[in-house]
Image 1 (cartoon, rainbow over the protein chains, first blue to last red):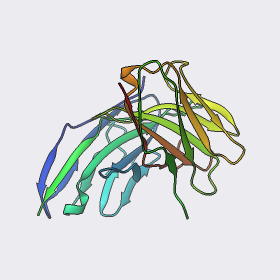
Image 2: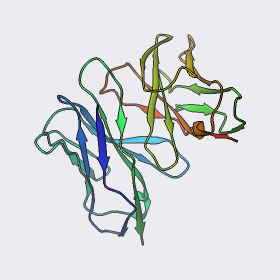
Image 3: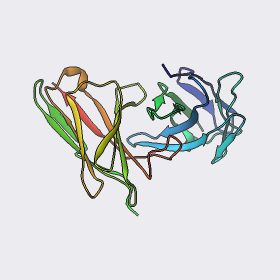
Length: 113
Length: 114
């Protein structure tokens, strides 16, 4: 079945550092790929998405490129802020009629001033 | 514009009891999905409701059931509670059932089973 693997956290960075959170997936065909962010005590918010190969999703300085050849969707940001501290989830929705979204386990990001 | 709201915020039950969780979707949304998020894990899809019918279901037993009302709000019912049902239950709404539709999540209901 479909699966998503994320790098384990926590990822600890200083403010203005470069961020990469790795995400790889297993799915048949061409799934849609998503990154969600969860701030403490809140529900998930969609950060960005890509629905076909080579698409780049971007939002709030975060970017991720849908790489079919490496089945990856790594999240990057050039300069993180303390306010970016949260848990980040990579997710996919499979191709075909069955909608069942699959989430990774989440990666905690801690940004120090 | 109110986002997705869920009630109650927290709930404590004992094994064997039954629980009902409620969700009001974002204004204009017609589709509601429910997820279970165990501590330190990603959300797991329970089921999705559209036009008052269950459209998709994840790998959850029949103890988990739901309902969608004509105003698109939804309930999640869990019978015969087990300790392992302790989790954050998230509701998400969207406009339509396409896999590319953006889902908007509520803050969740924290269920503790003792």
